[in-house]
Length: 416
Ligand code: AMP
Image (cartoon, rainbow, N blue to C red):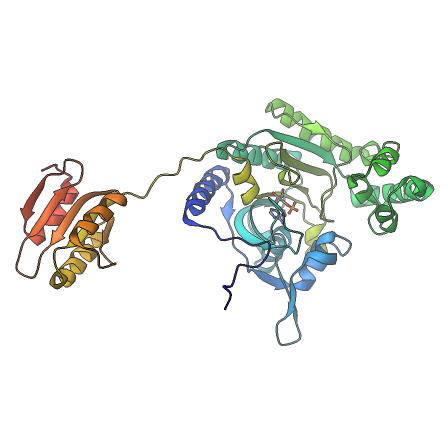
């Protein structure tokens, strides 16, 4: 029989990776916790309707990337492809509008998209995300951007660039959409067939296309940033002013398109030139219309998500501390097994990091193994009634102890 492998586009988090991920999680917790964001965890799957309504029917995610299944009772469920719609659902479901606003939440969770796998793009991946729900202010947007910049900085993500734009409000977008659609239809000859086929579904995507002819045609296309209503332009100017004051560099990118439908006003994306084709490490923006779209009353909100794997790919070394071992409990003979087991158990209960022999090695093999795992001390337990050989692995000195004094000796950390 051939061995079974993990599905395409998924990966195992092996211990060395797990340690780096734990460092990232700790930093996210520190950066976001310090700014008053509280952690939230939502279910791995949700009603499909949540993403159809919350992410947008015309998006790639909803059109072709969702893992959707029947729950056996005729209800359609979907593995979450993103975190914002679930967090907004939870905000509504738990009446968080009654709390002091904005409600500031963060998450670190797994997400699922049926994309073509490549380096930095997986079908199961993790994101750190932050959402501030209930504030319309430009300060909220700027604060969120600076928090993501801070996180990327503390994780050591290299060669980071921030792109920034504004999508205006839905009304402006609708008018602009008509203008852009008309422009695209008038210039179909210069566009790729794929772009032409999507003009009416999602004209903004034309800015995303990489083929030369489309890119050249799009240089003359009208820009949404030039069509913003005065209040939106003012909001955007304020965001920029705050970022400037914080000395956060950014590039204005009027063609910035986010893959999700729900954004309005501020949008941004951090990319790392240390990554290959999949250079986006994190992004987000303001999504004032989403909560209403999910059945709540109009509620302004803003947030971002950043890919854990991409952050780690673009980060340098993270200081991963090796797990120390205070005590390795060896057995001088098979009859010592119960005594050794009891000693290791008691040592852990006393707060020591203790391991015991579990593979039936010879005594010599056990000492070699204790050295390999970096044990500070080794207790060599003899048959019932006999003492314990206590070895200081730093000095190599060994002495005899009564079993009951081993733990106190390790806790004292005294050399022999
Ligand atoms: P999005 O939710 O599409 O705005 O993505 C936010 C961030 O999540 C991106 O910048 C990536 O870092 C990460 N990300 C999105 N999709 C994937 C994927 N399929 N595999 C790995 N990371 C992803």
